[in-house]
Amino acid sequence: MRQALIDLGSNTIKLAVYEWEGKAFSCLRYECRYGYVVRSIHGRILSDEGIGRVKSILSELQEIAAEYGCSAGKGTLCCFSTASLRYIDNLQFVIDEVYNTNSIKIEPISGEEEAECNYLALRQVAKTGDFWGADLGGGSMQIIQSIAGKAAWSQSFPIGSLKLYRDFVSGVLPSREEAKKICGYVRNQLSEIRLPPERLPLYLMGGTTRLVTRLLGTKQFSSGQLAALIEEYLSEPERAKQRICSVTPERLNTVLPGMLCVAEAAQAIGAVQIQFVETSVREGYLIKHFIHP
Image 1: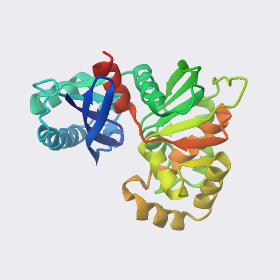
Image 2 (image 1 turned 120 degrees about the horizontal axis):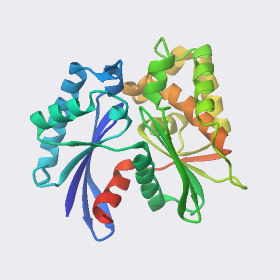
Image 3 (image 1 turned 135 degrees about the vertical axis):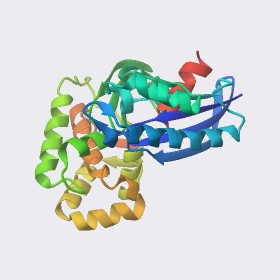
Image 4 (image 1 turned 135 degrees about the horizontal axis):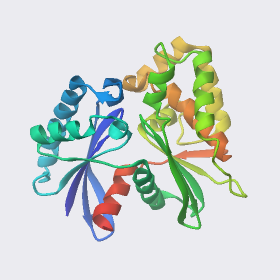
């Protein structure tokens, strides 16, 4: 069977087309478009321009899904939104506008369900049943604790990389003073996290953290390595711009706020070793709603 999923996020809008049988599944096609939805939210209202950009991108992704026989009308193409639409006041208007144009109904999922889907995805790739997991998106970050192969605790925090950039940064990259404010805000948001008796590995998901691993040259790194890279970029912003743009220019504004967020999260949960994994909320959504409905 085939199922296409569109993940409408705060920074990006992604399509994944899966083929699955029983409990096994594989991704046949993956596409990513930058929608920058958060930038079009003003006073808790997603602007007409932002809605138009969403509809345009969805139309493009729907055409790709159709190449694999997936469509909303047949129920083989679904679209869900995360923090991108979670805090807007014109949510129903956006849903109706998209449905009238694209014939696809956006399903907003809560921070709790997003964290649950993250855990289901992480459970497929984690090497142990005891771990921390984190998914850093544009508008939020979900943090999950797994003990003995079961989700022991999870929470969604409003500390996404694009949101942090929009709320705290006045230029292209955060200044040292703006970086301090970002760290203070993230630290305050994560202050209620309680540590288990022993240190656990941290598995990271998300496009910003994927870019961090490319900048570091490794998918597994220490909190010390991350801190050193942050210091380098804060000390030499022009060099940092050149380096980031040479890898993924679309994330120029968000990668350093994201790095600061990850560093604070690692400190809050006591993680020394950090590993990026190639899985996402989409795999978790597939498992929850289609493979194990």
